Every structure is written in structure tokens, then in C-alpha cells.
Image (cartoon, rainbow, N blue to C red; front, side, top):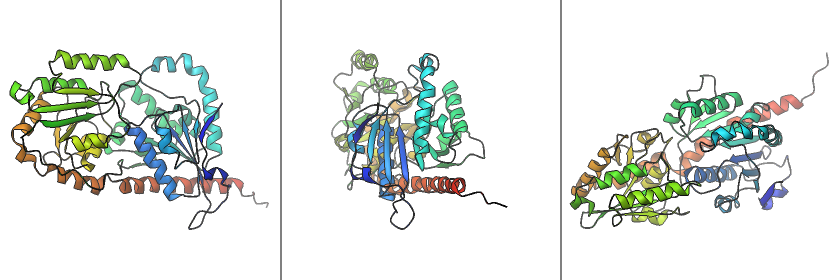
Length: 411
């Protein structure tokens, strides 16, 4: 049974009502695999908000698999938020999903197909929502899949196959993501960098070495993100420099308390309890970005783009990232931050040491980072790209419907 969690005034919208500027108000379904407020969740919120701004009279239904913090952020812009089962492919439990749970897939695909039939456009956020991608093939020309992840090995093959099967239009969040999926030339694709609504006023900056360097790592605790490598990097600093750094690692593991405990134990074992704090996930990281001198993403597996790095730049905080996935598309090494090789702690250790010893060498990085954010990663820039993709898909969807509904001429 569906649980409707939000039904504002748009619930009374009548199909065929006109949009400002002409045309009919579309019915849009937005499907998301998450329910928290991590990077992909916030990107989804911003996309739905953009759709509402572009189509104020539209009916916009949001489909989520669970209730969570994301719901409150979506209620003001969605016509309704519906909680219902989604057939999601996650790395954890994937073997069970592809064996025992297969029996539930036909029902999930039929449910998704019903929503696609009732919609002018279906926006599917990330490739792991398998039921909607499978159903999209049965109602072509109505779906967009927004790809935010770069999986590896067999998972990449499965997800690439799902996208190709779906026939959906594809939005990639970086050139690195598009390159990883390597879709055939005939696919309708475009690259749109994720954008965010940054603060009106960035940090003033001004680290001069008179206090410990404030380093922030923000994100889900996982092997992909590299928290363990960062701890090794700080532990490898000479004792005098270790005393001149404050590191805050903020985030939680997704339903994996054992991983969180292991990370806390690693900090203690490295003798860093007085220099490194491990803090739980927060829904609003603004105060953390205001605190930081440097934000780091020491990722050890491909990041499709790197939202945390973009958010840091919005606050005028230079990021220290690894050269993997889309991160080098975000940060300009030696100008707006630092890009170091992945694979081990040594490059991070050396960079942190340089930052502490010679703060004047990166004095203008924060201002340059903010300028790059405004030019390439603002909310307006991302909204423009998503709106162009939506307009193109909606036009094809309406053309196909009109052709289907028009009477066949009699000779």
C-alpha cells in the first residue's frame, strides 16, 4: 500500500491545465533510490525544485523507497511524496537481489510501468532503480535517467546494460561518468555538472599558521571515500606537524555500524584521538564548511563528480582531492585546490605538510575556488542543463502521444 506523505495544493491540478507561457501542464514523476541527505539526495532535491520552478502548474509526484530526512525538503516542491517499494540494486546484498528477490521484480516493473503510462515525463535519479529502467523500454520516449555513480566490474556491466535496455535519455554528471559507461553513439546523452545553491557570502579565509590547520572530511563512511587512507596520512606526519592539524571526519556508514566502529578504533590505534574527531552525519553542513580551512576528498574508488568539493568551493574553501573519476574536473590543481594521486597516504601527507608549513603559498586559493564555483557549478548552471534535457524529452513524449491519439486517415 502506498503511503502518501505530502499533498499540497497541486494535488488538485487537472490534466490539461495550461502552463504559464502556453502549453499544457505536464505530469512528472521523479524517482529516487535514497531517503537521507547525502550528496545524491541533495542533488535530487535541487532537480525537483528546478522542475517546480520551470513548470509551476505541473503535477510532480516523488517516489521514494523509505521515509527519511529527505521528505521534509521535498514536501514544499512536490505535489505529493509517495513511499512505495522500489527494486534497487545496491552493492550490499546484490547477490540476494539477483537471486531470491527476483520473484518480486515483475510486480515492481508493472507498478513502475503504471506510473510511466500516467506521466508525460519520468525522471529516474541514478542507475540503480532497476524496475523503472526495465519498464521505461515498454513506454519509450518518456524517461530520463540521471547517472551519478561510476561502478566497476560486473556492476558497471549490469547498469550499462540496464541503461541501454531502457532506451531512456541519459544525463551524466561528469565527462568521467559518461566515459565510464561508454554508451553507443546513438544514445541521447548530455553532461550536466551538479550545481548547488551556495552561500551568499563565502568564508573570509586567512589561515596564517598561527593555529592548527582545520581539515574537514565530509561524507558517507565507506571504502570508496578513503577515510582510512586519510587517517594514515595524518599519522605519517612528523610529530611537530601532527600537533598543528585538527581533522574532523563527519559522516555515517549506510546501515553498517561495524564499519563505523572499525574507523573509530583505527583513529585510537594510530594515536590520533587528540587530533582527529569522528562525528555523525549532519543534515546541514554549513557550520562545518564555515569552520574548515581545507576540505578533503581522499577517494580511492571513482567519484563520479564530487559534490563535497563543489560545496567547499562555494564557501571559498579549497579542496584537496585525489585524481580519480570526476574530481579533476572540479578542482584545478595549484589554483583552486590540490589534486593528488590515489592509491596511498603519501601524497596526502606531503600536501598537508606543505599547507601547514607554507600558508602563504595558497593564500588566494579560496577566492579562486569560489569564482570557479560561480562560473561552473552554481545551481543556475545545473538547472539550465537539466531543464534543456527535460524540455527535449517532454517534446518527444508529447509528439509520440499526439501521433498515437490522432485518428488513422481513411483512404
